[in-house]
Length: 200
Image 1 (tube, one colour):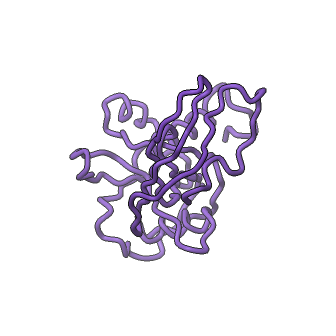
Image 2: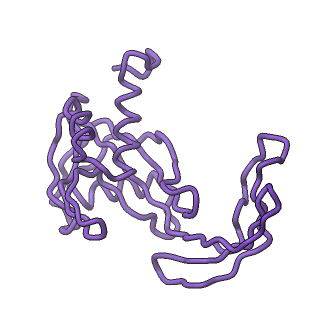
Image 3: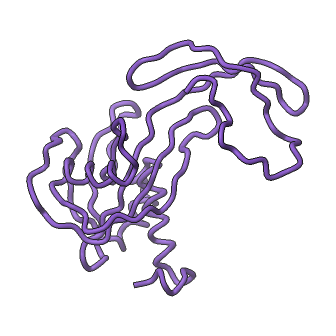
């Protein structure tokens, strides 16, 4: 990933305001994370090195039950910030996988449920200022229990009422970015301002 900064991006303006990258050098690299230093020039002409962290892309899935009233989530501990919160199933893309395959695989491995469908909702960058870490969010409408979970350290999964999600967010019982983006996206699509084709 080092040296690919800005690739595939489209300049929608006149070019003013763009941070120009002259190059990058590798500082640290392992299976999970790469840290580099980019030689950047700001629009004002100031030039300095800025660190860039690259992590593997991830896929997250909002799994709704057949009624569309409950969402499958895990209550789990995260050691880095030392907190508990509700999270959607998800994980990192394996080599050669496309995000939709990862989404379906992670749901089944973590929960034992197989999604009836997988629909892409949105792709976002959770820390766009200094981290490359694409998160692909999907919606599964309905799921069938096919086995016991094979990933045993992903928390305790339960069906949570979708109507309770706004209060869980307000009380900081859901704080991770992937779950917030996915759940708020689904709530927005099902709300009164959503297109009729999206409301069921």
